[in-house]
Length: 326
Image 1 (cartoon, rainbow, N blue to C red):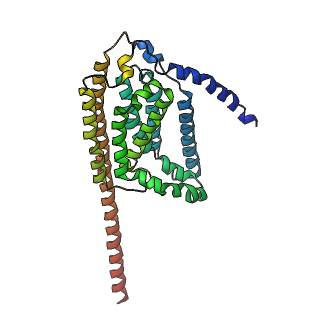
Image 2: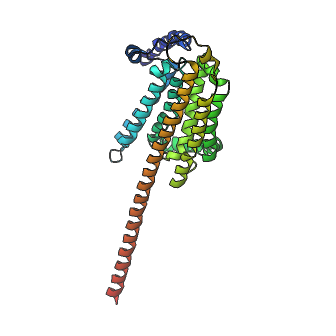
Image 3: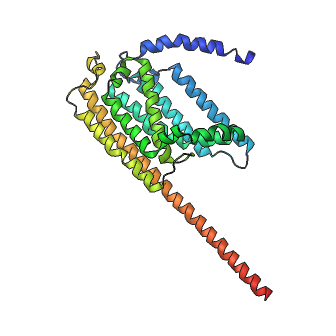
């Protein structure tokens, strides 16, 4: 019981912080300076506590696997990828980018790109599902995890065409439905929006990266095409935002700000950011996928060569045995 005493003050601290978080949401931030960029971090307990729990669970599982299987340790590279994904999530949702997301549309755009284009693929490169399977007991693995992975809701949502459409639809509907403006005004809708974006991104990148078990496995050329086809819709959406003749969101249009660009100029900067840096991130992802394809082909070639060598050796041994018997 003594070990759980910390839960009471922790819960009290969260309860005390929630009103402050809600009140701060949507308020106009001061003009950016070196001081505000260094100290203007938002510490939302409803984001930080779950993220800290996920991080602790991941590293605890890695430690357990490495201790139980010293000859087959969990790859360090995967841990680095996951750590970078967590760091990107923190930057998106707690750094000054988050502090200015309801003041500047361009900051909001950077936040969404970090979540969907950087954090999500990095987290998946950390192989969290593989780690969960390795750390679980055979009973839990066969009775719970694998049935969930192969259940019909997961199979439908992770089907590449469905995942691709969910990602694209999330980008368009979130920017052209009232929910975007509502998220700027309401902290709970904003939190839901972040979960929605992250969930859609994880679904999209899961079959493309292919690092974890999945109900659907795509050949490497199809993975490249799958990701490449997202670039045009990203560009069209970015240009639609950039070319809009007036501010799209009442929140930014009516925000009284004595510094920085006008609401329309800020919106155009957000559109350019989405176009240039969004497509750049897609190109980087395509480069990694192409590299993975090459490494896969090299591995398959070596495996085929070893199989042929074993077959030739077996044939030679059989021929020698036959000659010896005669």
